[in-house]
Length: 321
Ligand code: DGY
Image: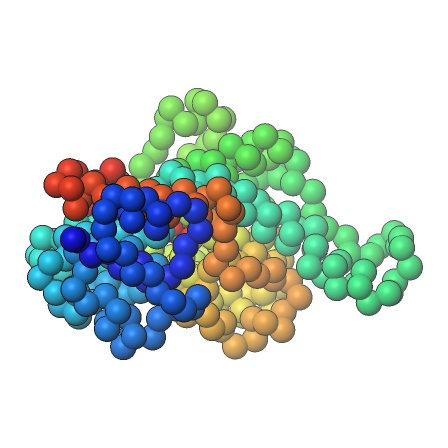
């Protein structure tokens, strides 16, 4: 009987689907990230591993599983935790979970955009404090989105959906991507900017939706933060290292930009020194895809990929190297 290891408890029917398919399934008994040693021990002897983005899948991981390994299915769309050449060289299939989390992440990007521009976290704190009285003409003034410019960095599935939501709220939408998308421009009325710099100079809200690659690490750095308007907001739901977090703290402190909404951090679960003390940032702990719908579908898609590969079929959502 083929063995499948699931490195953390997941919602939905994914585990049941794997058991119904006749596999021996071991699910981590801990609702936390496994320590490296625990992980390497737990995955031994598996034919397939359903893993988290917090699990580093490298040569050591592949060797720890052993020669039966045929598939590593990431419970995430991002695959920066995968050493893809190593998986390829061991003939191990890599899969991810695109599409099923697009709506959840795009909606969360907008939740952060609205939370930071309307100062929801500060307002919540103030409301609970009993001060000030119910209404004050100048209390916690924020920024309206209608008529403002939304800059979408990275026009993949999630960036495209964020652009659509922005448009539906009356925002002007500009985008930067390595590829121009004329069809999308015609459909949504978004305007292409040929460099990230052009976008950063113009946008009132910048929402980041690029994968973490060597070319996107610290894409948002001190110099690029300085190009943004002092009234502008930065929102990141992609990967933490895309933003130089130390530079961002400085920019938020100095008023280089107005505020930020962050779901991802450079060294999760830690934050750069000073970030937690700032009131002009709203933060969530990497929960952008955390809806019942998305997380259940992610588990089920990962399970389908494992079932396909262990039955000799091609996976539904392979990661291309
Ligand atoms: C992903 O899937 O890559 C997200 O960051 C986690 O949901």
